[in-house]
Amino acid sequence: MKKTMTLFLGVCMSLSMFAQEKEKFSHVSLGLRGGISVMRDYGKYNVIEDRMNYLGGANLEYTFNPLWGFGLDYVYMPYDQDYQDAGKLTGLAHEATAYVSVNLSNLLAQYRSGHWQKLNFYGNLGGGISFFDYDNTMSGQKGDDKCLVIPAGLTMEYNLGKVFAINLGAEYRWHKYTDMKKDMVGRTGYDNYGFMLATAGFKFKFAGSKKHVRNISYETFELARAYDACAPKINALQEEVNKEKAALNAKIVEQDAALDAQNQQINKLNGTVKDLEDKMNTYMANVASREQRNAAEIAAIKKAQETVVKEAFNALEFETGSSVIKSTSYRSLDKLAEVIQANPSWRLKLNGYTDNSGNLEKNIQLSQERADAVRSYLIEKGVSAAKVTAEGHGPENPVASNSTAQGRAKNRRVEIKID
View 1: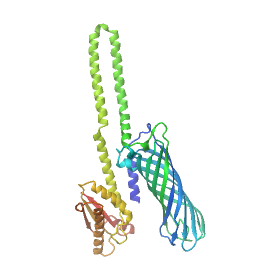
View 2: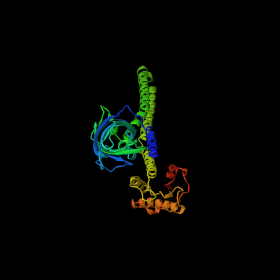
View 3: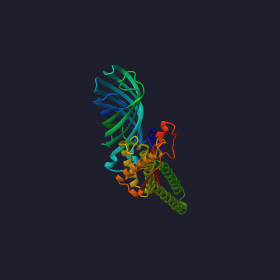
View 4: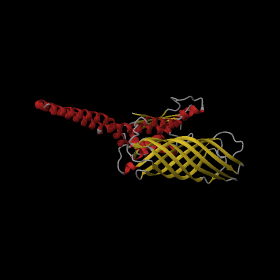
């Protein structure tokens, strides 16, 4: 999770350098949402039923440009559980978080138009504090407390017009606490609790007389910035032309006897004006050059593809002591398969590794099976078998010390090499 968060924040910091246009667009929006939540806890001691509850919330967001924004979020989230043995847990969490939101649609498809421009997908990641009350009749504990919460989610938003938009979202909220349910008296050790959220809501954009930055494509935003950069030079050229014309007209009135000479100056000046206008038109054409936009688009797509490759193998997990890929890794591997098929020239080599625990031959066999499992998955998703090879290396080339559990976990991996 730490690697994924670091990569995500790095992308956001890079995107902040793209655009600083704040005068011609509105940026503030207010959102309301409601939905359901399902509590997921790990290391529980009792079988539990009934985990679904309703929730509500609001957020205030400042969208810097069509690629990313920053927001503050509040969620009102009741939770309750029935213990199969005896007793009931009733709880209520008030959660305040700050988050970064990235417009994935504008990031991956900057030159959309029509109805497709109205549909946007946002990736959100943040952190904050959860204040919760609890009443557990099984353990007899009742009170209130607080803990760290990290929300991560994906939102699909459709712009209905200049001011309103509707959205659907899916979110996972991770909580760090010692026994958040208070179901074990005197219990030690840490349990992590999570909530899966499904929500629907709407967004109100404070647009005023300006366009809101959430309603435009990145292409439109870049053209506005390019025009603003050119406008001072164009105005300066126009002022220079106007001054020279005024001076020449004054000389014509004052010097009728030198009319022929003045006419020659006028012709010369008109030629200068024509040259300036030609230079100005050429400059504007270069600014709007489609080739330049295509180069920026290719660079953005390439960067996004590299991100998909890194995320796929950062998120890759197997069942313990097995070559069976966990279902949580399917989504990232599906994206990886799409990227590979979109790049026919790519050739991939999958290298499987283990730690140095146990029998060497079994470790080599397990590393080979895991690399083969990833290769088979990609082939099933449409990747040509000729493009992918797999090889197991056992405990070779460790990336961390095998003397600690954390180091051994890092050494149990599958790496990708692209040629």
